[in-house]
Length: 118
Image (cartoon, rainbow, N blue to C red; front, side, top):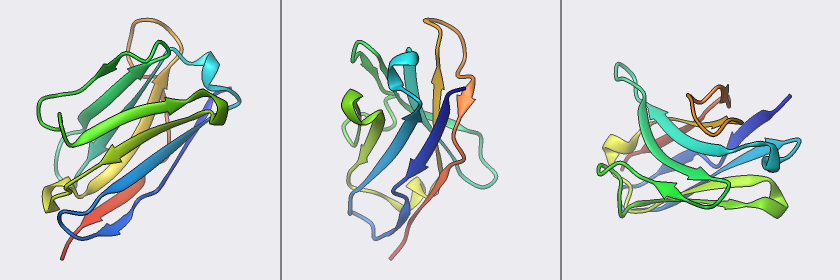
C-alpha cells in the first residue's frame, strides 16, 4: 500500500523560502501523479501544484511563479519549492497522489504546518 510522508514545514518570515518534501513508499514509480494542496483554518482546501510521472507540471495562477513542484525518482520524493512566502501562505500543506491516469487524488499524507509570520 502506497504511503506519503510530508516534511519540511516550519515557521518562516515573509519573503523567505521553504522546500517541502513528500516521500512516497514503497516506490514513486507506482504513482501516476502527485500533487500538493494546502488548507488554512476556516478555508477550503486549495490545489497548489501537480506533477505526473512524465514530469508534466500544472499550477493554478494563484501560485504560478512562486511555487515549483519537482520529483526525484531515485529518492522516491516529490518536492514543493516555495519562494517569497507571504502570511497568507500559512496553512497545513498536504501531499496527495493517485495511481491511475485520471481521477481524484486517493492517497494522502498527514500534512505539514507552514507558518509565515514576522
